[in-house]
Image 1 (cartoon, rainbow over the protein chains, first blue to last red):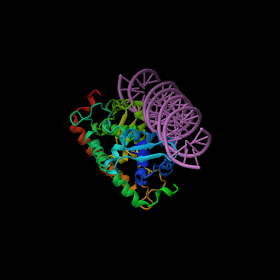
Image 2 (image 1 turned 90 degrees about the vertical axis):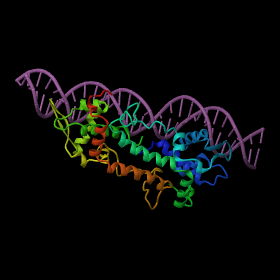
Image 3 (image 1 turned 90 degrees about the horizontal axis):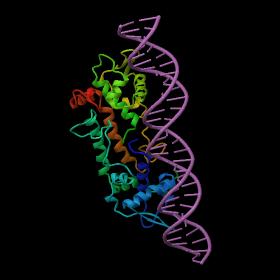
Image 4 (image 1 turned 135 degrees about the vertical axis):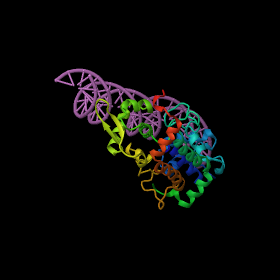
Length: 146
Length: 146
DNA sequence: ATTTCAATAGATGTTGATATCTATTATATG
DNA sequence: CATATAATAGATATCAACATCTATTGAAAT
């Protein structure tokens, strides 16, 4: 609901990265374990995070992924966008090409309310906050079996 | 975004019904025209609205669909549910079977905020309100060419 | 009665997101 | 240097949502 699978996977993975200690890389497999995302698929998603500049990757023995930006500098929308979510074009519920305050579709004002609250959430929630919340939930998520 | 195609189609169609004068049935084709939903597919969705009791259908010449409930008695969540949206089970973003305030996933509190604002929107927006808003937008939507 | 309109039902087709597989490239460690 | 580890890339497979098609049933109008 709300977000497609890929977007949700990206949020899970980035949550894992924020929770990790970030002194040594965390491998795709470890992240997959934590997040429950199929590991090969996760690799592809992480690639996008690398391309967007939020993550550094290290090949070879002992390699993996590392956050390359302060968690406070990344918000949910950033990650969604990097994962391919079309942030700008939140399409009209009525399918209008151009649906704006002038020339709106019949559901425009209603739909706008929903979009606004989503955007509020996505732009204002940073991964610093996510890391803190996640830490409260479990001091040891990385060892838990899903 | 947010809702799958079918759910959005259902909202469009019900908006059309609320906008109609409700003294004579509006046909699947007319509704399709208004809403831009493929007409055969719309029929299937309308069937669900009929089964849920929000709409009456009339076969044969001059037939079509009629609201069978006061618009103020139907909210967005009602229509989504009737269209097959799993209202109760808003699945955990981390894929946990049971994700609750106790035994939460790492993203639980963050995700909950989003769900809450969605639910607030879906439960508290009635089709009475939708009808009024839609009426303000166009006095004559039914004659416009998409 | 017959014709025409329109919903209903079920079968089938299409497509895009999701997932997997295989091979390749890069790098740390013994 | 050899080996094991791990990311990357591209091809392919899977599946469910979405959409269409065909035939049938029901009801109004002439």
